Image (tube, rainbow, N blue to C red; front, top):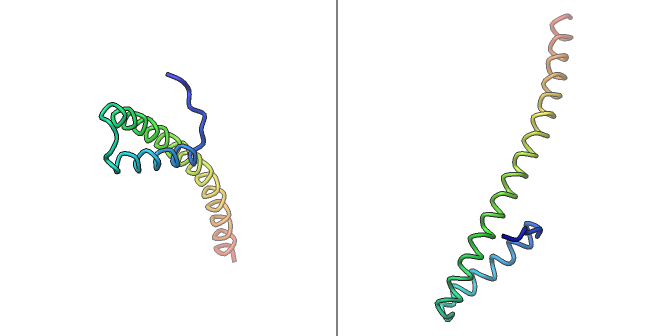
Amino acid sequence: MQEDNRSFEERLERLKEIVTGLERGDLPLEDGVSLFKEGLELARGCSVQLENARNEVKVVSDGLLKDFEDIDDESEESVDDD
């Protein structure tokens, strides 16, 4: 299978086109099946891209949250010392 280097937005746009074509219901069976298969692959690709982005955001957020927790802990310690 060929590697798909399209962006999330490009995949999503193509997926919308496929859905529109399938919803019309005027395609020959073979074409409809082919589009359906392409749509499944696009949906899987979008899902992988979303999961990767979610993980990246979580990693960054966890790092920022830890930094904020450290700052918060330091603030509480300085208040407790007073």
